[in-house]
Image (cartoon, rainbow, N blue to C red):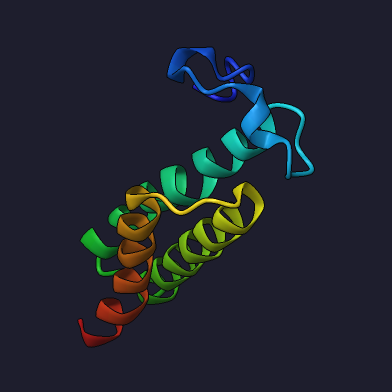
Length: 101
């Protein structure tokens, strides 16, 4: 939705929250969210389901990308939200649990 509407209005997110970031609108963050946790997770699911040799590495990369995104977001927004903690934990879980599988 951030790609289609980078002004943030569908989510009622004012552009002012991007004041401490290099972004003027939500287009670039939206592209990242679509590719790493969005498209990347879908591809990861397909690879795991098919027992592909690259599945473990792919899922770890998606988990690491998610953790990096969340930490960067918290630093740039100067805020910590409960969803930051939840998604950060999911990213860490992807990195750790896929090694045990």
